[in-house]
Length: 111
Length: 114
Image (cartoon, rainbow over all chains, first blue to last red):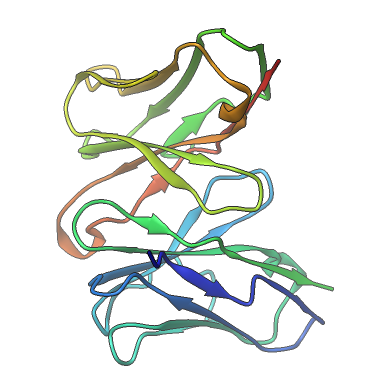
């Protein structure tokens, strides 16, 4: 029973480095979401895909953040020139109807 | 002011206690109300989901929504140590390009000690 998987689970980057975070959604799920969860906070919405179309990117904090889902399945969240404030857990969720299923997240630490 | 407010706790209770977790929200357009449980270093998992005012029960868990006061609650009966986790309330407004976008509360850390 495959759930949502994310890789890497942990990533340490030096400030200024680019990082790429991968999400493998549940097979057949049309909708895919990215959230950012800072320590001690609830997840905050970053962006939403319906198949390959990015319909909402209103939560991306700056133009250093970029997400894609070119074939409507796997998605990648890329952060360019990472900053210390980017340190957080990045969660991916997929859904077919109303229920979102979350992956374990990628914990990003920027030194 | 955040759209969803949740007391972060932490909350510590003895095994067998009744636990009450609460959130308030500000936007009456929110139509769907959820409670997620998140264990340490895991992703959130859905516990309860409702779209109407009133109570919904599932085993030891009861979700309560009062749309008139914009207040949502989760009650846990006969709490167990395995219930120790962070509990997140979430709301969303279906429709438009924001379909399915969840707005979360801060999360309440619950510890149930034997």
